[in-house]
Image (tube, rainbow, N blue to C red):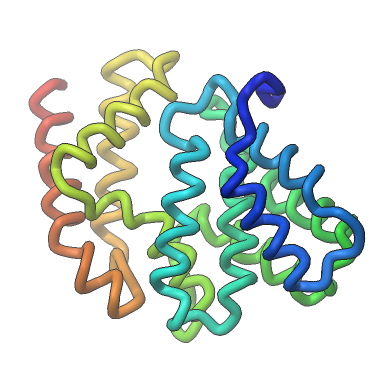
Length: 218
């Protein structure tokens, strides 16, 4: 259940309300925004937190010129990890279902709601089809953390490990290494020219270094 005692970040709530009004929401979007932010503040989260949401939204803004519908991508960013239980595998699907329900209730157009749900589901694989400009922006924004400075990347990796503290060390190392290798095997880690130029080289170095550390620990 969401942590109802967590303070609501007013800057994000203001951004949510403006976004929903801009896209034609009926009524007051603030209650739904507060519910989303409570979800992002749940106690089981260590990396997939409000800070991650804020970071992804910032990257979407930076890449917005590449998107076909930047607001659709922003809405998808709000929902892409809105349901997050590290012990479950259907988080993206449940997040997409939540997006459909919440945006339908807000009175947004059906085509926009469908696009947001599609984008949320795309974060299962981070493999947008060629020409899917909205998908490219969302996936690049979500994966931008991989291309951070080594210290920031190490903090990210440590937070992920905390989220999976219930998994024994050998099992976590094997599973984590497999995920990282899948990322390195993507046809491209970043699809937008801006993100590729900014993050690709650092991300590949970070991923390779983490894989080496996991293998050495095993």
